[in-house]
Length: 197
Image (cartoon, rainbow, N blue to C red; front, side):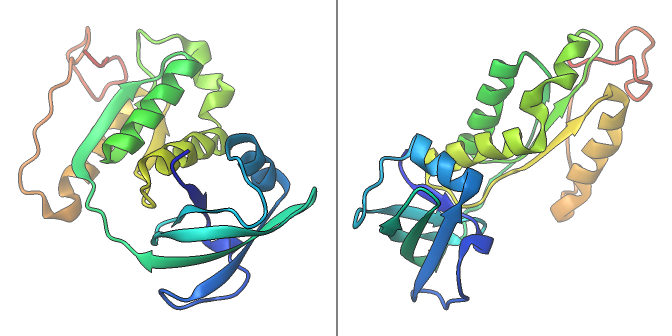
């Protein structure tokens, strides 16, 4: 990975921008870091603070139970692309690739939606569980060195999409918003029978 992302609740004490802070990981988060990052005591590396900014961190102590770091972060604003990406739910490996691409491309929002043609069992996939979506998002943010994730949501029925599109178009004062949908057999894109073309 190009960087390591920390969450704000992993900071031991509050800090001011540019000040050194202490961070502590344990449990599943420490296991994730051991799996995806090569760490040793004293090693310094690029770091991200979730929904805040970039900086650098170093490993202070490394044990079986927890990993402690020191870090320094500066706020960073990154304007995401004003794009709502809508993708029909597919097989688990494809969903992971879609999430990764949406994060690294910098879209504002990703909506995964169940469709008429989609395999219904995919909606019960473990890859759509919130913790799995978060883990894939974290990996993509670390690769892109971007601390700000897109909004990611799951709609199980196509009929829910119309209201979601309306909200997206109204958000941020967008006066014009164009989209094209295949309305399906009954001609009603909001009727639940529509499908993404």
